[in-house]
Length: 406
Image (cartoon, rainbow, N blue to C red; front, side):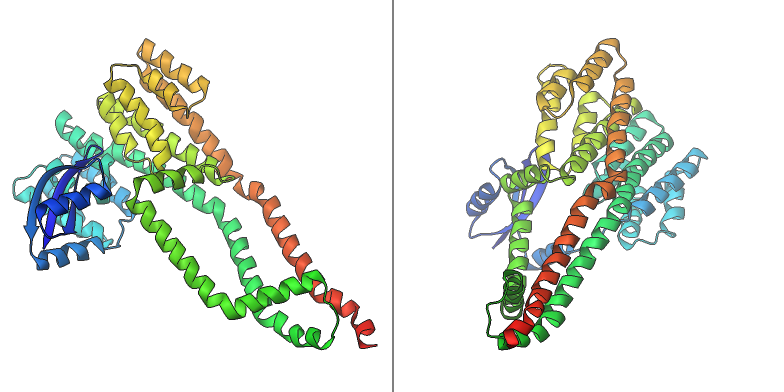
């Protein structure tokens, strides 16, 4: 039998389909996967419903963030001009190219015609469009100014998109070099080494260490290459599964990522900068501090940093200060903590958060803009080592060829 369990976990309402003999067994299986799960509802479902649900989960299509921002901008312009939300949605949905996004806006338009509010409708697609979008739309409805909420949402998403583009542009050159080196290595092993292999074998002399190393790689590549590739794919699959299913494994992997050269600082600055930026914009837009922190936490992808930033929310809930939470997290420099304290005491928290956001954004952009320069010594060393090993492995035996023949 199949059971659909609706449960609370880490403050979020989730649902999962589990195969079990009884409802009690289904709950026990859920508890093994997530100890914090608080079951709200359990119901038996038919096999056809299970298949439909699995097909929905296997939908790997993603929303194009750039097009989504464009849609939000169009909504802002039309709402600001005084058009009704139903008219705006009917006009926009026809011009959307991204299939998933188009499907979402068709569903929202139908919900509006059925009498649902915009916020109630978009909540159904929170996993696709993000918690931030849902929160800003709710804010717009509460304040009666959805157009302004759309404008603020567009500005926040645009800043996040620009940072992503900047990172992709900065890593394009190093990735190209690494990819080219991998292709060159495979070509050398498959097409350059084999012709020399038979020649070296006929020499009946002890080959130099670099040559033996190249021949060993060629032998391993030829005889065990497929197994190595399959093993690597299996390891990658297992790690991906653990990362997505185990909270403890994800926490350890995300913590390890922060220790990698260049990658770690980029992730840390991006996550912290994004958190402060969104928190500041939400507070400025009128969302209560505790809600702003909660929403900003949901856009932090790194689980280790998320756990640390969660101390800020806990500090506020326990009646403490924001400054105390920033300090306890251990992620912020003393200068930032003092800025938050000054802003909290003087009532200029939004201004100080904006300054902190600009500070981290500046540091992030500096590292991203200089990624090529930072990685260049490593790439040069790798290329030099590759060429040096290849040269010694092939030319050393040839230098001794005359002696070997005699």
